[in-house]
Every structure is written in structure tokens, then in C-alpha cells.
Image (cartoon, rainbow, N blue to C red; front, side):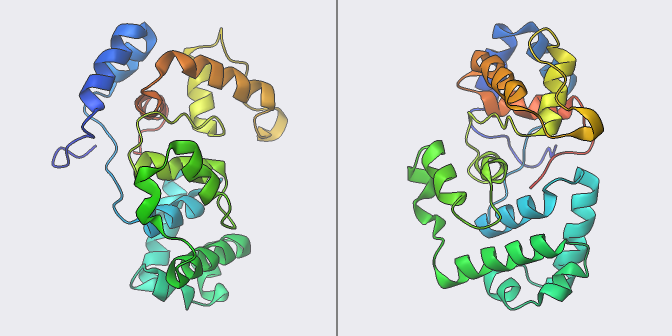
Length: 222
């Protein structure tokens, strides 16, 4: 993804382990071996990007984020907490997403959210803390674990791109991920995806990355 930024310390070991354990994953890794996630160092911006990206394409999310960043001039909790909802809506955010961003910014600015202790918590504890914040669901929390904390073993089974990739590459294990009119994946699909993902422990984040890369040419960044 970016040759100047090294991959996470575990990346090479994980790729080798996955390639040996799973021939399908070996092919996916070989096809996009030049890519890896680039970490987002700022927790607030990582979570804000994830809110912006909810339920829209990677390309659309980047366009909205660029307009938002220009309007904010400085993407910090203090600055965003002072922005009007109407200003946020004007860059292409829904009313609800605009409210979520302001709530997130206020939580950081006022100290209700303090990420300094998160590196010491396990994945599920961090997810539980994050989903208590308005506008952050499990998918958003998992994106944070992947792109900010670079946790190695996250499989977001609510992610449609991941489910579509699993259905394409492992059709014998996973039913079609969406119903009529692009309905959200049902519980049976998510359960099947989680069961399939057990074969990739403890490197499910790396498997997730190459599943994304197999279906989306634009790098996933949050």
C-alpha cells in the first residue's frame, strides 16, 4: 500500500502462516503481496473516519472526508466539537452522522473518552468501551482495532466487502451475504463467516486485509 511505511511487525509471519494453512488465502496474499495497512496514529481521526465511512463506498467516504477536513481546517476534537451540524451536513454527511461526529468530538474534548489505556485491554474490552459511544457500533470498533491499534486477530463479520469476498472464494462455506435489494447480512451468514474465520486465528486481521484487497482496488483506510 505504501512502500515507505513498513507493515506491522507481525505481518510477514502472519502471511507465511496463512499461506501454509490455507491454499485459497495463499493465492489472495500472493496476488496483493505488495500491500498492507498503514496505521492511523490519531484515535479521534480513526474513529471519525469510520463514522464517515459507514454504509458508503471507500471512494465516496474519501470524498466526504476530504470535504469535511477542508471545512474543519483542523480535524481535532476541540475544533469539530464547535462545528455546526449544518456545516457538517453541508460536506455530504447525513444529519445523523454529523451528530455522531460532534458527540465523538465532545467526548474526546471533555475527557469522557480517554484512549491512553486501550493498548492494555483485550479486543473485546475495547469494543465494549467504544460501542458505548453514540454512533459507534461493533463494525466501527473493529475498524479501530485494525487501523489504529493494528490488532492482529480481527474479523469484521458485519463488513459486506468481507462477506462478499468470503462468498466468492469460499462458496461451499458461506451463503450469499445479502438478500433482496442489498439487505444486511443475516445472522446465519455472520455465524458462517465467523466459523470459517476460525481457521485463520490468530491472524484474522491479515486474512481480512487480503479479502478486502481481492474485491476492492482502492485501499481500505479509516
